[in-house]
Length: 143
Image (cartoon, rainbow, N blue to C red; front, side, top):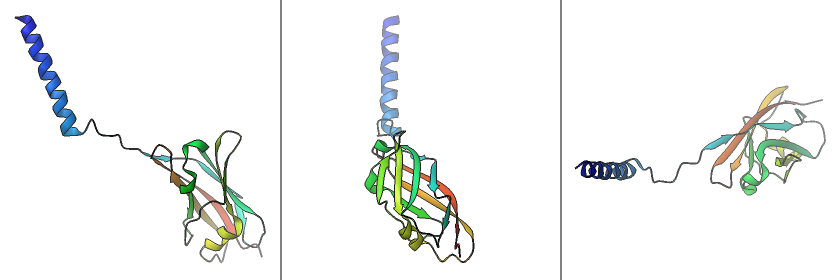
């Protein structure tokens, strides 16, 4: 008799698990989260009157974890987003994205005085998730 009760309880537990899976989507693919990553924009002060080749962004995310064609740079004073001119892995295997300095200067809203601008690097990861990180730098005319 005890075996029948134990068998009946096991069947109820399996049925309950099956119903919970259907009702609550436990069998569905897990959602892929957005990763917040630390970035560092260089130079830390961008002088608009200066010349140079690149604005470089170092990101604390493995180079191989990123879909490179999805990387964009935006800012709180920018009119559009930019794709990098060059991407590569640094000595630690983390993402480095380089943006043409003249192009970065060209997408900024008019700057009339020294100001702080927050840049955000974002993109998709190879696992289907996304990443994003922000860093603020000084912008000034330099005249």
